[in-house]
Amino acid sequence: MTNEPSGIRERVRQEMVADPRVVEAIVAAVHEQVPVYAALDDSRLPEVRAIAAWGLERLLHLWATDGTLGAADLRRFRGIASARAADGRPVRAVLRAYRVAGTVLTDEVAARAPGLGAADAFALARMLLVSLDTLSEEMATAYAATSEDLAGDRGRALRLLLDDLIAGRHASVGALTDRCARLGVQLPDPCCLLVAEPASAERPDAAHGTATDLLDVLAGPGDEATPLATVRGSRAVLLLPLAAAAKAGAVLGERSWRGCAVAGEGLDRIALAHRLAADALDTAPAHAHRPGHVLTDADAQVLALLAGRPAVAPGQIARLVLGPLTEAAQGHLLDALAAYLDAGSANAAARVLHLHPQSLRYRLRRVHELTGRDPRDPWHRLTLDIARTVRDRGPRDPDR
Image 1: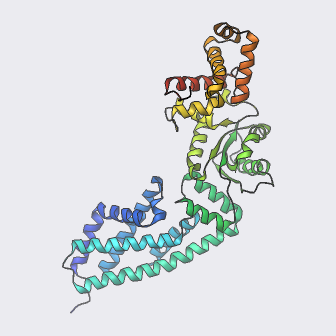
Image 2 (image 1 turned 180 degrees about the vertical axis):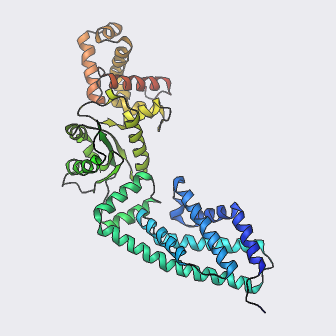
Image 3 (image 1 turned 90 degrees about the vertical axis):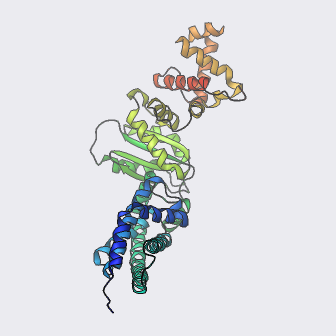
């Protein structure tokens, strides 16, 4: 009788490591059985797949060699736990995912070695139990330590929270709620996401100081919700109460900065809002940045449409830009705007509509009041023209 590992272990190990379907089976089982993982967006799945592949290879190696987790393994598991603490994924869900993976591993071994002897089967069970027990203790300890560090350095913890929100790294609304509870914060929902940058070249570190300054000015002490700020390159990114969007333009103008504010989104769409605002700043022409104003989600959606990557349907873009002008009661104002855009001047538009020029100008002022867009301004005129064009070419609203 020998205690040496049998050759069947190494054969099974090689087969499973070489078969990509094993990792996919593990990922699918975790995705199906652990709710937090089921809510992960596609950007997070490659990381889950990479960890599954590494864990599979290490555990099968330990079984094939009668080995145990080493110092390097434990360091990696602690690092994974710290990362999960930072992104708000509950440690209970993480450890459950490892147990699910262990079950899949066992089933795959059984399928490849139906005649597995008792000694090899016992070795597999013992390796999994010991490994799961060891990594659970190490990961729980690291998770708790990282959570305490984040809570202790509140400013850093809040920056990391916004970093994860704009990167789409939160697994679920529940995980975000738990993380906010640990930090003792209430995030604005709905909110305004503001992305701002200097109008001209500044020091590389300018965004850090400006982000803090903007946060102090835009979110007053009376706000119940907790505003957040972080930095992406030369840009400041702020998550603010919805009411703060109205004064963002004036505040940025005083600092010779320009920005894009996407308002009204829920916390589950912050990553999309950030991408939309950042793309708008990348593509907006210089004349789109008016002193004292910031680009809005309507401007950003028009720019996305022009770039061939609209985030919403053209009809929704028309409603964002035109606002109340899409209502049946304001049809005369929309007609006045269309005539002005087509004719090129108020006098010519008045003749087309058989109106006095002053009546036409009054209607254009009402367009400005209702939409916040001045038809005489080159950028506003372009956005208004695009909005009425896509509206005219799309399906009609039932009330028009």
